[in-house]
Length: 475
Image (tube, rainbow, N blue to C red):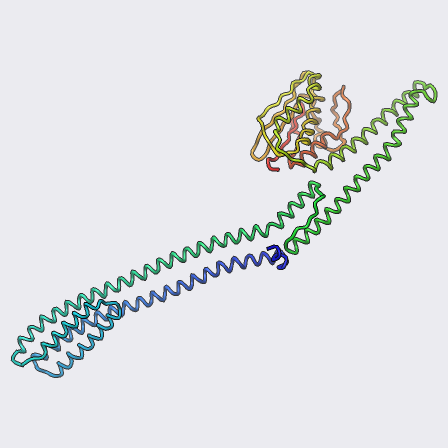
């Protein structure tokens, strides 16, 4: 099949071949149905003509009997040779009609009796003239019996016609059943052929989709070489070029980050060391103004170093977010584990942490989802007032899992809601006694959740922050 697809060329040609195959199958069935109907119509016409012929023969036999009786009785009474000749002629015609009926399945016994009765009548035609009256009376009786035989022959002819009609109807029913079966089989084969060809033709697109998803998830190690029609192979080559280009860009980005880290951290370390020497009075005692300047320098160099390290962490996290190592994970147990890990922090703030929900197993990257939950829980602890409550609620919904993390802190300012997930953005509402964050925590959380095909949103509320994570059930 693969060689066939490559020989035929484009997907459009393959699709045309598939349509032609299905059309040929249905067209062949329709042609066979037309031939069968023509045959049935011919049989019907032949049966009707035969029935008409049999009816005419039976009627002719009765008419011949009447003509023979008239000629025979008149011949006996009048002793007329012409009438005798007419009788013989009608008898020959009657025998010819009998032969025709026998050829059309009339039982031979009836014709033999009819012929014997006719022979008996013929014997009565011969005799002396003085016995003509007695022979005429006897002949009348014989003709009554002949008429009775003719009537029975007519009934049998009618039975033959009815049997032929029944046989024709049976053939019609059988042909209709065969035609119905052929149509059903043809439809079934067409459906199977359409589904089979559709699946076969869709396979390259499934591989294309898989390759595109792999590029989107930053799985750049696997070469892309998709076999199929020429247009599919062309797209495959473009995707392979894109994979190589993305690999180069990732390598360039990694080199850039390494270089910028080295180029910035080295002079920054020297600057911090110099400021530390100034504060230690190595170059001489500093007055109060000089110490204040040295303190400001030390504080800002430390902040700059933290920003550089945060930038490196964010880029590393964004790169690592697509490298998912999925495994069946109980999300409820994962929540309880993160709550227990940060127990000292929330107990030190006098907080109550509630975990709600039932066990729910999903194929996720346990480490990354754990880091996302840990980050949100840490923020909730930092921003919650002393004695407050932090709530983690897990729920299973159709097609997805939902995780809500809410606190009773100051919440997020309206002006910050649209930018809270941006890297290095820090909202205006910060806890007074906490160290100011780097502003990349929520960005990393969003990267990890998006890598799983889910989303994180900040829900509106009058008090506190309420974050909601939704993860799809399917991997």
